[in-house]
Structures are given as C-alpha cells and as structure tokens.
View 1 (tube, rainbow, N blue to C red):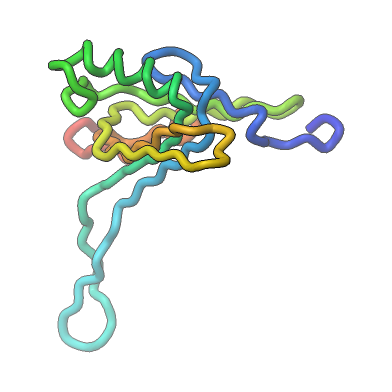
View 2 (spheres, rainbow, N blue to C red):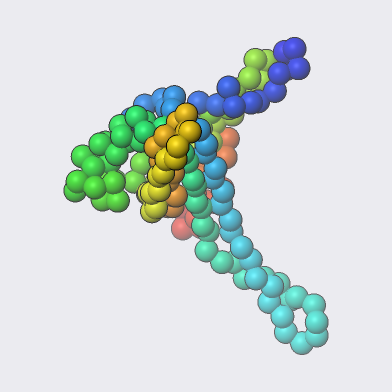
Length: 151
C-alpha cells in the first residue's frame, strides 16, 4: 500500500475478446457449490450431499464497447450474440504497492441483454448483460472447483 491507496475502480482492468474494455461501468460475478445436509435417525445431520456448481456474471457496457463485443460474438458463431462461442472475461485488480489480483471467468455465454435510455441521460444506451459462466471461475488464478474426474 502506498499513500493509503487500496484496490478501487480506477485500478480494475477488464479484458474481453474485443480487448481491454474502457467503456465498462459495472461487472459482478459469483459462484456457488451448495450442499444439502443428510439426515437419518435423530435430528442431527449424518453428513452432506454436494449439489452442482453454478457461476453467473453481469456486466454493463457503454454502447460502443457493447457493439464491438456484439460484432465479435456474431462473427464467432452464426450471426447473433446468443450464437457466439463462449468467451473469457479477465478481471485484474491493481493498486500501487499491492499485488495484482486476476480473476478469470473462462467460458461465458450471454443469456440476457437489456438496454434503455431516458431524457437527461448523460450515457444513453448502456447495455446490460446477464451471463452464465460454464467453467469454474479462477479466483486469483485458483479454481473454485476442480472436478474429481480431472484429479
């Protein structure tokens, strides 16, 4: 840490297949691997069962950035953004005097697109995307889950 500066939005770099993205206003991503308690006789769990891994993401892009991504996705798989090949999103967090932390969302597919504009907007036409992440997120290059059949 230098001069008290920690990680902030200014130090976030997001890379899409179209390159480093400047016109991004938001990115959120999460994953989960739920478990379910298993009961038998009595009221205490005997153990647990594992459910399926699931990861999702959301991002908002300025219209020019969204157009670059749309063109690339359309070209990669049949003409539409929903037809495009799964693509990676790389999110790097950097700050002076701090280590760079890189998260990788390896295989993303857009599943919902929304947009809108209203009078008085200084940034009309922001595109909002909901994504499914179909491979485990790498949190700081550490996978959220390593499938047992790969061990």
